[in-house]
Amino acid sequence: MNALDNSPRERFFDEVRAALAEGSVEKLVLAGPRGLKPDLQRVLVRPLLLKGRACLSLTYNHRTRDVTRNLPVEEGLATLAALIDGQFDNLHLLTSEGELQLAISRKGKATLRRSRVPTAGAEPSSQAVGGAAAPLEPGGEASGLPPALQAGAHAHVHAKRRFVDIAAPFLVELRVTDAEHRLIPAMARKWKQINRFVEVLDDALRAAPPRPGQPVRVLDFGAGKGYLTFAVHHHLRRTLALEATVTGVEIRADLVQLCNDAAGRLGLEGLRFEQGEIKGHAPEGVDVLIALHACDTATDQAMHLGVRGGARIIMCSPCCHKELRPQMHGPAPLGPMLAHGVHLGQQAEMLTDSLRALLLEAQGYEAQVFEFVSLEHTSKNKMILAVERSQPHPPAAPLAQVQALKSFFGVRHQCLETLLNAELHLGAVDRGS
Image (tube, rainbow, N blue to C red; front, side, top):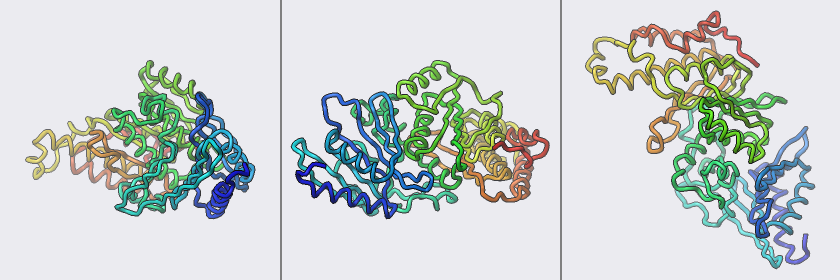
C-alpha cells in the first residue's frame, strides 16, 4: 500500500479482518475502474470455505468475460489492496451491520465512509456504492415467503437486499439495464420479478442444500428470453460460488439462439439453451426444476419430470387451468356460485393447484402455494414451490385429501396423479439421484 494517508486503508482492512472473523461479511466490491475504457469493470469478493480453509473468492468482471480466483484470506486481501491502489477508486465492505467504503482520490488520498443498515420504517442510507452493491430496502422482512421457508430467511429482517446485483453483466446483455448499469424504466416489473424469483430460490436452497461434492443441476422449461435462467445461473455460480449447470428449454428456436448467443458473449460456463418442450422430454437427473407459465397440464408434466429426476426443489408458476373445469359439478349448494363462469374458473384454479401441492406432499416434498409477485406486476402471480423434506411424511394423509377433494367436486382424473400412478403405484416413484 502507499505510505501516503495510510491510516484509513489500515482501518478498512482491519475491519474486514474482524468482520471475516465474526462471519458477518456479505461481500466486498471493488468499483470505479480507472482509465478511459478499462477492460476490468469491477471485482466481487465473497468469503468461501474450501476444504476446511477460509478463502476469498474473487470474481473479476471484465467487459466480455468473468474470471474467478479462490485465494487464501491474506493473499486475497493483499490482492484487493493492490487493486484499490492502482486500478479502482472505491472498495466497499458490506456486512449484516451496514457498509464501509474506502475511497481513493486520484492524488492517493484515502477516506472512509460508513452507513448503517436502516431500522424498520427508516429511509435507507443515501451514500452511494458506485452502483455496485446490492441496495437495501427498509421494512423488507420475509413475511411474503411461505411459512416453511421463513426460518431460513436472513437474520437482519429489517433490511432486505436485492438478490441480484444491478451491475450484473447479464442484465446489460438482456437489456434490463443500460451500459451504465441503470435500470431501464420499461424493465422495472421484470427486474422486480427477477429479484423475487431468486429470493424464493435462495431460501429454498437453504431448506434443501445442494448435495455435497456434486454440481447443482437446473432445468428451466419455457425459458423464453432467459431473464430468470440467466439470473439463476448468476446466483448459483457467482453469488453462491457453487458449481452448477443450468439448462433453459424453449420451444421457439429464435429465442434459443438469442440466449445462447448472449451466454457466449458473456463467456458463461455451465449455461446453455436447448430447443424443445416439456412433453416428451426424457426424465434426467436434476436438482432444481423450474417451469413458469406452462399452460394447463404442461405444469403437471414438468412436476412429474422433477419427481422422476430426483429434484430437491420444484418451482412452478401455473398458467391456464383447463383440465378440471369441464369435470367439476360440485354439490348442489355450490350451484349458484359456480354458475358464474369467472367463479367456476377461479374454483378450478384453486382445486387444480391444491391437488398438485398434495400430490407433491405425498412424494416427500414440503409444498406451498403462494403469491409470487404482486398482481400489479403480472396477473400470472401464483407459484407452487416444493422443497424436498429431510424426513418425508407418510403419503397416506395427503392422498386421502386428494381423493376427498376429487369426490367432493366430481373430478374423475387429474394429470399429475395419472402420471404418478403410471409409475406402478403412487408414492413409489423411482426418483433419480
